[in-house]
Length: 103
Image 1 (cartoon, helix red, strand yellow):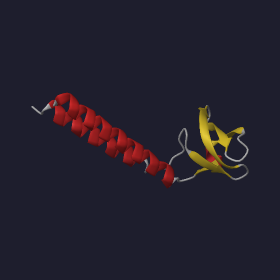
Image 2: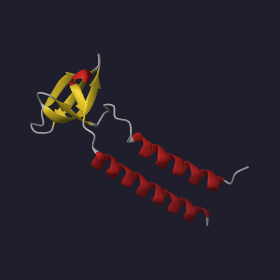
Image 3: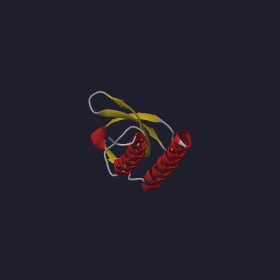
Image 4: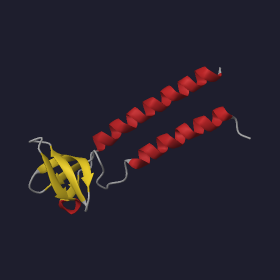
């Protein structure tokens, strides 16, 4: 049977890898940046029925409702790289804490 400490460390590594892979998915998501032909760029802040979303426009900060088919996902590598950095930092902190607890 595996040592519980080794299992925890493997789980942490798997979570970090899954977080990185999550940045590859290019579908509209809550909090994701999108572009609309008439309104420019914005952030999806709510998902409602019938394939519609509420976006907050970047320039005017207005909330507008539109269909998902009217939007294009803005691929933000900077956003994903910042999230990956945060996840890695959190995982390092967890490993340090776990090591302190078991030594």
